Length: 609
Image 1: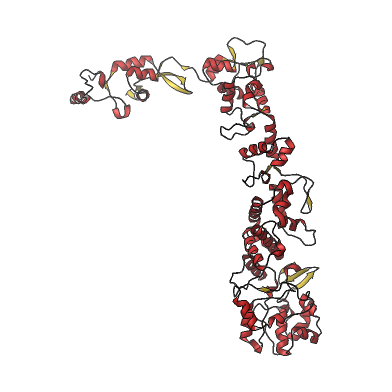
Image 2 (image 1 turned 60 degrees about the vertical axis):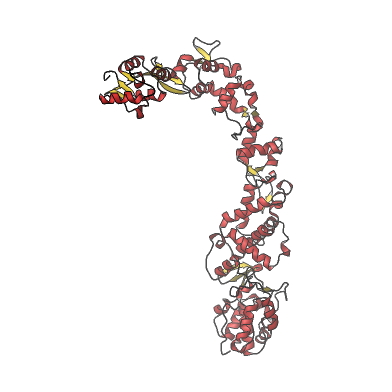
């Protein structure tokens, strides 16, 4: 039939047939199909027979017609261009139009036809806004004919009605999800995670996640209107466009904001409609990769008992414990469990008062709670290992013994106790090397008595034992516990460096002898008097307040006193005017042996005086 009536931009095949019929025959698409012997349903569904018949009548290739219509691929699955999707992605039986587009088509009066044209994208469910006029699409609430009959009456409406609809339409931009769908239908790849699955599954999971995040996990989704779903699409796309990481962020938001306790309703109470949507999948219509991401998130963050059927698969092993499940398993009060898990940093989830929403990894949580069950209170450690209270405190402070949970605070609690296994292990490690005796040998003492005799912390000797640093060790029967390990006082003294070199004068005594500050003595120990000869000489070291300090050789101290004088010790020194003597010495060319600003004191050579 000539002349050929070309399609409009983005026009659907059904709309093209309608305009073709009006142009050539002056009849509607419904009547035109009867004239040419084409069942209406075949055109609506997009069967190959319809394309072949229309190609002859229109005088165009089948591919040109097929590019403007969806078509069946298999049972309940349709295709459009290079995309396949379930039939729910289509809205064949719902009249959808943009009032601004129809008004523009009618006013243009193209080819003498005062009729609107339907755009192919209007038939896809995520498309809810006109991309050219930024107004919401009008979409019929109910099916008009169950998709069995063609109804193009909405393409030639009353202009006044269209103008009224447009006047009351709000302005909005297409959702990001709609933009994604339209670009993908044109063959563009946008998001790797969403592109990896059928377009309808990516769209539906986006809308469902967005709806639950925006309107609540237990919102009545059937009552949401097109505006609500458009907003849900915008919210959901913020998460799904970032793939698994973004989806987990959206799910975590639902987890933390849930109004129902997991202990009462499990994951279905936490995730509501989203959970039921995925759980209700029976394989007839695949949910897509969203299901696996969702399942993994639940297993990682919600207590699911082994044997539970979750999204079509049985859970073989729980990954996390809730506070409640741990309390039940180990017969502890939930507050005790939560306190230990919180202070250990193992709890994950919301920080609100509902502890039931917080979980911890099974292996880590059970290891901690088993320690808590075996914990020996700090006050009972002396009785348990037969040591003094002070020794127990020192072992804890040094980190040789560690509490079940060290929260670095002074608050008491069961978590501050020490695992009895750790206490037993300490005694065993201390007794690892040594010879068994009935009575202590000469010069031997238990660890506590040795520490008191040598004035060193008990932990220093214990550390030597644990590192295997002592050779002469004796072991009394195990019943003496901490006191059963005997060490050689002489060996310990040597290994700890308590004796080094010869006896000398301490720095503080030297400072008093010279009438100077301690730092002056330290300076003189390193300052040269003659090449290779310091002002004071060190003869050894001694332990003072946990540090090794130099001892001053008495001979070098006597020699220094004979060779040097402080300004205040020189005849003629007047405390009220030291500058007089200093100037007098300077006039005679006598200068301090060291710069007073560096040495900290003003010394002169006796030979110069």
